Amino acid sequence: MRRRLIAGNWKMHKNSETARGFAEKFLKIYRVTPDLDVCIAAPFTELLALEEMFKGTDLFTAAQNMHYEDQGAFTGEISAPMLAEIGVDYVILGHSERRAYFAETDEVINKKVKKAFEWDMIPIICCGETLAQREQGLEGHIVRHQVVMALAGLPDELVSKAVIAYEPVWAIGTGRVATPQQAEDMCKVIRDVVRVYHGNAADDVKILYGGSVKPENAKEILDMEDIDGALVGGASLDPDDFLKIIKQAQL
Image (cartoon, rainbow, N blue to C red; front, side):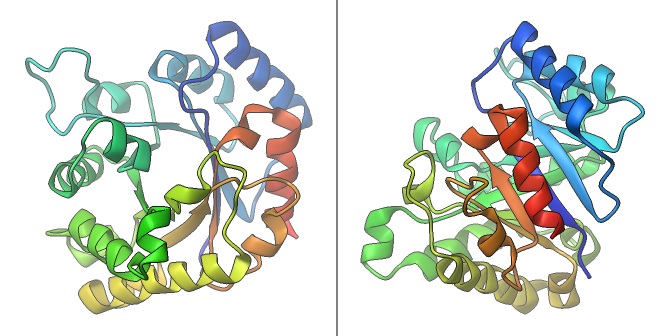
């Protein structure tokens, strides 16, 4: 059995005061989850505060991006060793917003995935198709290509530790959500392509669904065979809603 993961992605929300306020409230209502992992991907400026507040708990932190070089003349960037220094556990890579707004390519994402593993952080590798691509019947082709490229050159033992998040672009922040069967079908596509290129690592790699996950729809999505958790956007900004999703994953 793969251990489940519920990851909250705050994106560009919260400041020091509101992040600490979230953590204080969440820690009061949260209970240890022996059967799944929970992490929050906060803005860079709030990660250290969360690391300090989550110390002694089973909660993890994640960065929302990073550069593929350890250091250098890359103004405005954050490196893997900088994140590792403060204890960050996961890093989201290849999110559709990074691909669309910041022109990140498959090759760049692959470099970042390798760098994350080099610094003992687990990459949460995002993939997903646009509405236009789905309407053309290209969703399988697009997602397979993104996954193969992101994992290119990695040994199977590292691939088995990776997390892959299927996030249909048309369902991110739109209020639309893939049906449980649509989500399952695409997550099976991901597991199948990992098996083709990396063999039995496909049995261990975690595959999450992301895209307007809410307390109301989390249970039926998480009940699917090939879905091992969720990458939660807007609902992770509220401690009560985020906890409800975590509880759905435990049922």
